[in-house]
Image (cartoon, rainbow, N blue to C red; front, side):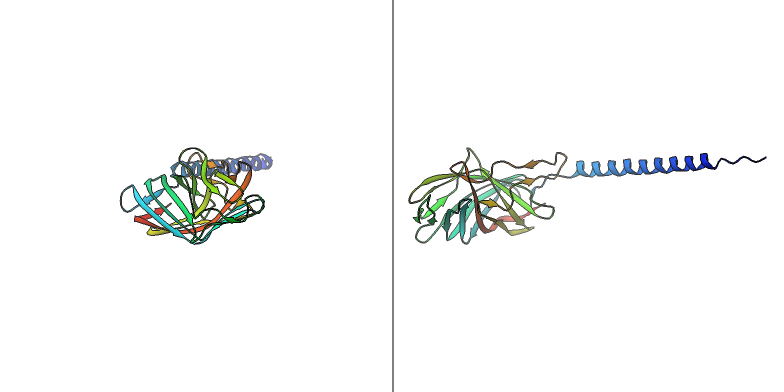
Length: 229
């Protein structure tokens, strides 16, 4: 008489398959964890040594609130330096041949000063999307980004600004700050690394409660070849 163990054999085969799949998943998970742990934070690299000087120039720059108030300057310029692989500092001046022009019932229509200069800003690198690098600009000290004096109102712009960044490797780069109706295109920036840190602090605002966006593009010139990876 012959006995068959078909059911038991099938069960053993299924168990073996599950064990194999389980081991494969564990291995894949281990590899992904190792890859993340080995990834370095988004950083500046240079062919020279830090600090690396920065100078920038751009065209029309506009501050626009969620309520439709605008301040527009004809051009911008910036100076600063990349201090290390993870930090740079910059001061930006917005200006017009006559005056920067304000428009709106709250701030008034007319001149808002020949120049508007930011406080010294800390600019830290990160990722704004899966394919784009960025910079987070925030006051090096305190909370005030810039002070603007318009016909009917003097107000402080506070918070941080996240912009797309294109950096080499080259001695030139570009910064793109985009937004509309007081909403910045990018409001968060993320570092790549074990902590996967994501910064989502206070966005730009005027009078502490009116959301504000800055729209401008600058071409940067570096004192040495720079890249951001």
